[in-house]
Length: 319
Image 1: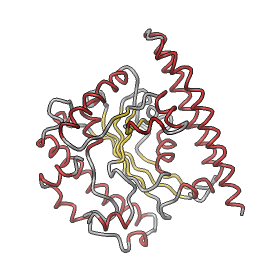
Image 2: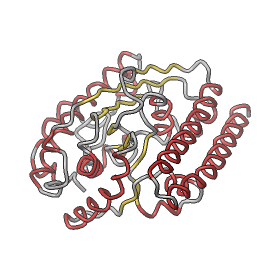
Image 3: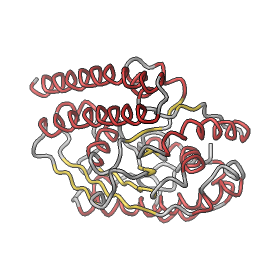
Image 4: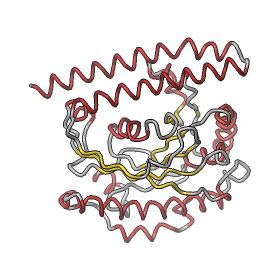
């Protein structure tokens, strides 16, 4: 009963925080839209960024208050630049990941933004906030012709980010990883789904030259994957996060060859190498945290990831 009451209270705080901040974003967003004067736009952008940061800070406060003894083991964020441009790529297990990443990176890099499907702009309240904060909306097509169209649309949408420090977030697996999903797709990894590189391809094609680097994020929950209700109730008691900054190869940047098969293969191989390392790292972090039971029954073996380098596999994962 106490957990349920705590969950309802923190859920109410999150809902009110989201509603009030989203409504507060509308006026400066409209000013920026209707008064396209550079000093006015810069002032509006600073106000919008401050409001988004306030939303994250309030969430961080109730997350800390609801479970004050939780262990947050975070490495790799100290040298990052809050005024920089970053492409952030992470594994994905639960909706809790989003609030965890916002807490981990708060004050270290700019507010995280996602590439979103165009239809999501109509989501009540949240869609309004995404629009006000200039989240890039796109119509993700699977054909190469659709990809070229998306690249051009997204390139125009991202032009404004060249003047505003920005972090673009991508969950490379495309969905939350579970043992059932790993088994269904015959993933060669013990802890991860196969990487899907479409989002990274668009981000690198449209903003690659602007990014200071790729932040390769590994998220681990040593006591088991929490649900969002677990977070609200204060049951999230341990989080491990490792952040590695990687240089982005120059031949992966730009729109000129982004839809070509050879480019897709190069990007796929680069990401797959990271995925092999991430899979091994997750296993090591779980063992160090004393959670060997988490690995029992995991589908596949990490060593089998080496079989993924073929060109056909990289091409299929571009979708």
